Image (cartoon, rainbow, N blue to C red; front, side):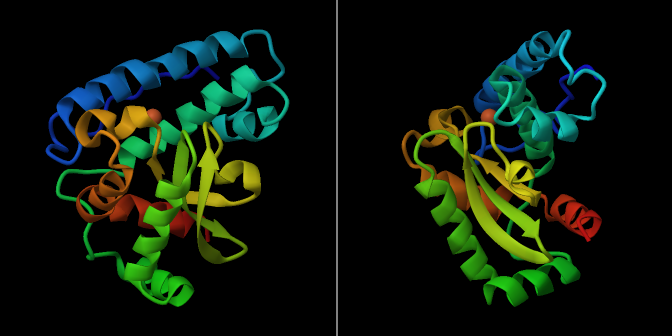
Length: 199
Ligand SMILES: [Fe+2]
């Protein structure tokens, strides 16, 4: 397969003030584009050509760093844009998902605190996740381009904690960015869609 950069599912200024137009212009138009371009170059002539994106990410992990890093970040960012929407976040979740979060974390607030702690505690670049593993919801964190895909889990929500995702708007205040992501940006309907597919 060939990677292509999708359009954002909203205007570049639609997530302000929680994520600015300038951040999305750099993050989507430049950074994600670079993963697409470099990924396509790295894939050429390799055994990974012709595989699905998820299979490339899993197969290249630990074997081909340039394919893995670019394909991994392409996968992560494809979902990241859809994990946000204008007027998102907050406490109105689809019922089945909310019930499962309360079952596995004791409360929505506890899930949010765990998610912020994971993202804030990721040393250097990476991601904070809500994942499904063995029928349970779990919070996790990964470095760089890694995701729950390479740990035998299914990601249903992720927040990019690379500095390119928040430094223009939040400077060094990564926990404030993570809180704003949960309170004002998350597209819970898309999280629920992935949760349903994950079984
Ligand atoms: Fe990013």
